[in-house]
Image (cartoon, rainbow, N blue to C red; front, side, top):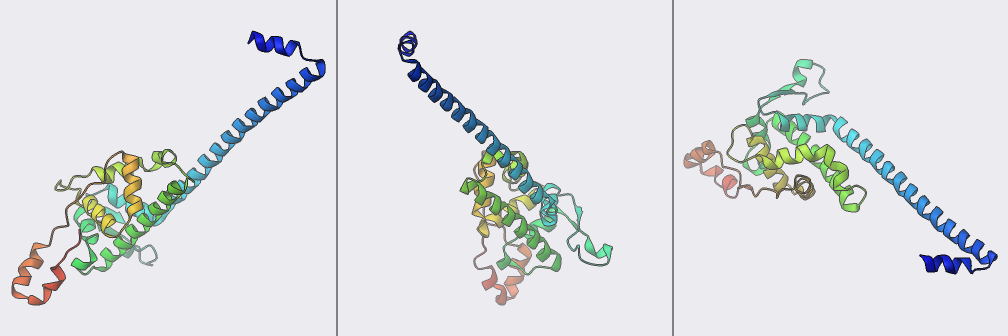
Length: 226
């Protein structure tokens, strides 16, 4: 440091002014860069907040999250466009949701079950979009973790065989069966847990019993997906 001061003192006044100007420009550049990065971070935070606000404000997303969160039965507005209010709402319980999310090759779906599947397809498409933003570097896991951590843990932590969580285990099978790979990666990263390797979904015993006397259903249960 003393050598540098000595070197500077021996410079001509003109050169001292040039050095001072260069140092001042460097300091101004660093300050400007820091301010730019800070402004970019704020823009990213604001953009993330808007994106996540839109996500949670989406009626189908809100319906799906309500069904994930509550297994005891909640009134869900599956048919918001119906004129009669009594026809707009359906009570969905844990087993109702689990049944609706089974592999489409294993059963035909009722009107309510088809509507539920549509809601969850929509939710998972929105989550795939968020994952694509993370993959592209537009968002980071840190950006979205405050918004999605609860849901990631809720979905991944549910244990197969436990009461009142079969809907969530079945949702994981649904996610894997229909190729929502981005959702699996996103939730595993946010929760810090490996995506569970759930066994194939169980075959309905009543269907198996009916197949004993009805050979026509044999092919439909030949290869159930997990």
